[in-house]
Image (cartoon, rainbow, N blue to C red):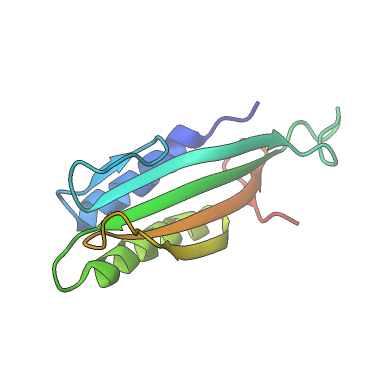
Length: 134
């Protein structure tokens, strides 16, 4: 199994903390945030690419990361969440991941909190050479 989650998570966390000193970021699926802004960033899927894995090519993994960004900033929660997502987007593109989905979540339980969710998919052989999924 190819396991680069810590590398990707660390790159995202470092970039976010460089812009938002008080940001809370977790590597587990989202729960109720205890502070804001809050980011849940975790590997939601890691599977072997059966069409590219053999004795001559080695192993290739298809990875999917799911991100949830929460903001409760008065007078700017949507803008703050989208700015945070833009930082994450830049880091993920740097690793050649493709954003396959990004949408707001209807937070009917608490309209004071804005939440946006995105998914990124990519393929890697486990080295520094990350490749777009075909």
